[in-house]
Image (tube, rainbow, N blue to C red):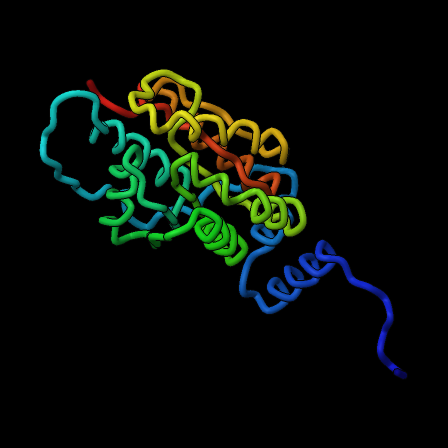
Length: 232
């Protein structure tokens, strides 16, 4: 037909055109549309001091999630500029998720599937939000196609925090298969991933992981072993 182009447009070109349209309409800044300008893009200056909500729990005995360590991780996320949290309920990370749910200064969304959570978090990144997806490693088994399309074709990023890996402190045999999922998946998709081995390193690791997300327009994953985020 006259006036109709026969040129095929790939998904990468579609993504670039879409981002240019968002910038042109001033709906997002260039920093969230694939233009890092070769420098670290810091979080916007806050008009008021950072506040972390109070979370109360019933004290338990034995290996259990640590409220104080969850507060350190959540504070590190907020200090890095994270303002959009998507999570799939998880017994290992649920206190971090509780902080997000109770925080009125951010947007938190509970998802029922991990691939949906990643789609929401990475879509929010495209829309100018600083996002993190928090989940159990077993759910990553649902995510290879979503990660491949959103990260490699669309150049969308998000921080990913996940529980259960080959580190210490795995007390339940039901998580044996869960521990096999994450590392091979991230290696196959060439997604940067690392393990938090000391809670004191959380602020540094989360801050610099988020820098990579923003600078490279890609997901970055951090594993949170039970021996690091739980108490005895």
